[in-house]
Structures are given as structure tokens and as C-alpha cells.
Length: 442
Image 1 (cartoon, rainbow, N blue to C red):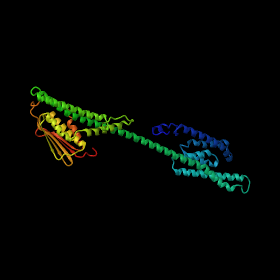
Image 2 (image 1 turned 135 degrees about the vertical axis):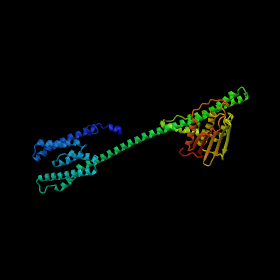
Image 3 (image 1 turned 90 degrees about the vertical axis):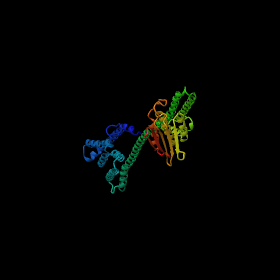
């Protein structure tokens, strides 16, 4: 099992230039064996060179111990092995040094040049030694002298080629593993980044849905309850004077309450059920980000599909009329089907504008205009100044100040235009224009 990233870095616990302790132990062992070999071969070298034996042994030990630095300075180790080749010592030093050089990250031209020098040195020394041994036999011509070049070439190739080829293979494999490790680290970072982005996207989707549901709740509760309060105030005012009208107002209050409860149940049911109104069954665990995003999208679609439409606009205006408001509804153009978002937003704008009239201008004459155009639908709700204070019972309706903000968010979210403000005559006007088709990015 391989390690990646920080785990791989933490595994580098060797002393000095060694990555691991076992690598240091291996090099120390190889250096000791090489030093012993070169020290033993130094005895013959000292005898042939006419030097004291201690000098030859010490020279061999120092030369063989150079194998300790094969990972740090492989070029120096190979050069030392080439230098002591004429002394006929350093067989292990040559093989391990060439392997370490080929497995290192040095350019291949350097490896090839030093391997060629080592092969040439081994070839020359082998030929000279073989020729001398044959000459010492005393035969003329020496027996087997024609085979000396063949033996020398075979020995040079046998000593040089295998460690070089093995080193090249190990070095390539090591580089491949490092590349795979880096790739795995990059993939892990990308997956982590994607997970963070997915969580951010899910959180954004959840926040958007909270805002959408809050707007829906505000529209339903504010309008229905406002009408209920208006009817209750009227009921209080006429309870003793006109019992029949009081009964009608009480019935209207009950109807409004039931409608509000029905819409709230439908809206809350969206949050508890999935597609088709079926309860969501437990499934295999999935990431929280995916659950949040999917739930938000499902809730958004369900709210859009179950929301009100322009066909219910007459009923909406009729409810305001029943509450005592003088409302004039006019429609221009040929009605046609629109996207669910467009129809729901248009309906909610008119609904919220009428609710504001109930709250802030009770008894004022109100005009609702709806225009169907080629590429857009326009709506306007304008009320005249309210009658003199005291002429109408005070319903004391609270205001949260979020109605106009919610309408503007709805309209601009679909690429439309929203304008609201007081009129010159002392009334208030709310205007909105929505595109007939919902933009693809909306």
C-alpha cells in the first residue's frame, strides 16, 4: 500500500540524506562489504606496486567505503570505481555504483558517458590481465590468445550492462510512482474543492428556498389575515346595527381562515413530500450537500406548480370587494398561458398591492390593470388617497415592511422591472412588467 501527500512526507525519517532508516542501513552494509573486498584486493595491489601492505589495504578500504555515498553523489562513486579499475579492485563498487547512477535523476547523457568509460576501463584491464596471464604460461604463441578480445568484451558488458539496465528500470518505475502519487494528491485536492463547492451550492440553494418559502408564507398569511382583520373590524362595527351583515362578515372571516389554512397545509406539505405528493422513503446515505440541493430544487418546483395563476385574479379582486374595497379591474389584450413562475409572480404582485391598500389606505378606490402584450405582461395597482380619518373603522393592521421588497425580488428574479411609489394625487402606485418567457438563467 503506497502513501500519498502528507503521509509520504511524514515517512521520510532517515538520517542525513537518506529518506528512510532502512536505506541508510542498506548503504552502510554495502559500504562495509565493498570496503572489505577492496581491502582484501589491496594486498595484491600493494605487492604488485611495491608498496607496504598496510598502504594497499587502507587504500582499498577507503575506496570501497565510497559506496556509502552512492545515493548522494553517484557520479563520484562511479568515477572512483573507474579510477581503481587498473588496480583490479572494486567489483562490487562498480556494479552498485553504476546501478545507483542509472537509477538517479541525472541526465541520461551523463549516465551513458560514465557507463561507457567504465566499460572501456573494464575492457582494457581485462585484456591486459588476460594477455599477461597467457604470456606467463611460457607458450609461443600463447594458447587461447585469439579468444582474449572476446572474453574481454563479454566481461566488460557483463559487468556494466546489467546494473545500468536495472538502474534505468528502477528509476523509471520510481518516477512513475511519484507521478501517480502527485496525480492522486491533485485528484484528492480537486475532490475536496468540489465537495466544498457542492456544500456552498447546497447552502445557497437552501437559503434561496428559505427566502422563497418565506415570501410564499408572507403572501398567504398577510393577504388572508389582512382580509380577516378587515372583516372582523367591519363585523365589530355593524354587529348591533345590521345583524344580517354581521353574519355575512362572520361567514367571510371563516372562509378566509379556511382558505389560509388550506394554502398553508399545501405549502408545508411540499416540504414533507417528494414528486407526485408521495412521501420520501429512506434510501442509502448520500452527501448532505446533495440532499440539501435536491430538496431545495424539489420544493421550488412543487411551490411553482401548486402556486396561484392569473385565472384566479377575478376571485382575488372579488375577495377585496367583499371586504369593502372599491376595486376596478381592467384587462387589455388576449389572455394566454404563461410559465408558472410568471403567472404566480404576477398574481402575487397584485395580491400584495391589494393587501397594502387594506393596511395603509382602507376604503380607498383602487384600480387594477393587467395588460397582455406580445413579449411581456404588465400589471399596475393604483389607489386613490384614503378617505378622511375616522370614516372607516381602524383595523390596526401591522406592517413588517417586507411586502415591496419581496415583490421587487420576485419580479427582478425573472428579468422584469418593478416600480413603486406615491402618486401626485396622494395615492400609491405599484407597477411591474414581466417577460412572457422565463429567461433560461432565471
